[in-house]
Image (cartoon, rainbow, N blue to C red; front, top):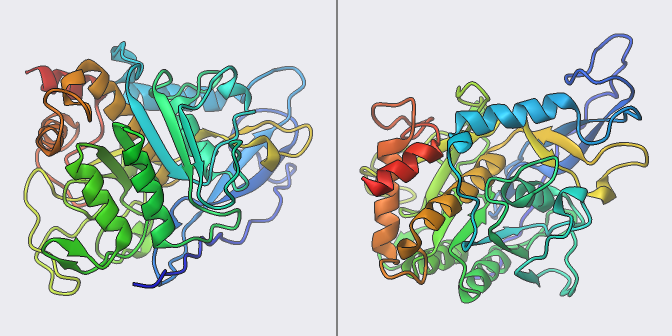
Length: 387
């Protein structure tokens, strides 16, 4: 198979807000700017599908250090919604691999932190960097330990840069990055990306990324992937590789637990083209939902003009995927036997975790094509594992 080109599109930016006519979304004084750090969904397909832009209101306030108060409040809301306030786990002893655009370790919320592994599949640089921004935002949701609080800040983080500065890439590069994560011995792979599904022929797919993901799952690695952002113009199913049976596929909700309008819905019925058998519990798509609308994030310093702040917010199932990836790390910390190299690790452990997700997620009595089995509840997920 030849390499399929990737086009990570951004949308046109809105007009610069006129503060005399329009108040900023966040109630901080002084100047607001809007930045785009690209699509909330990486497109891994020969057919270009536009993602959505990430809009950040970033404020300068000489009277206060750190991000605007509203961002901290929104972060607290999402932590409360997903049950993080009621667990003591921090991800220690669990390894997570983020495949994305890289990471900016100079951000203040990564101070004194060191990666456990780094691989640049684009420019082959030895020193970690992020020339686009999406990877830093996603890694921050997992690993930040400053003003912003990652879900699993004590986890061992590996980062594979597999997307270029303008978002171009191909399936084979992303697949190679997944293979590297597995070879590095990680427990969780976080894929805030997606595209069209390949054609599956019993033991293999025409999509090299799906094949690499299947290999990772066979090795006992938990793969978390985005449902997609086409909810307002839905194509009928979640994106690949979230569509792969044993991948944990994640949709997005707001701070109240209501579905984000852009979150893709799953099609769990029989399908002829591309071929797919009817999906059954606990593998219906998406499996669950997490923070996906106006989620506080980190912005790389290279994306921020002098005098402005390197924090913002974004909407997309990318953010929900990173959040759930951190939550799975907390679960594995509490249950080390089901880690990739644990005594009970392997594909059977992945099946168990998916059943626990089905049993513990909140808000749904049965599977819903938008919400999945419900909204992530880390406290209940850990409790289900101990039942």
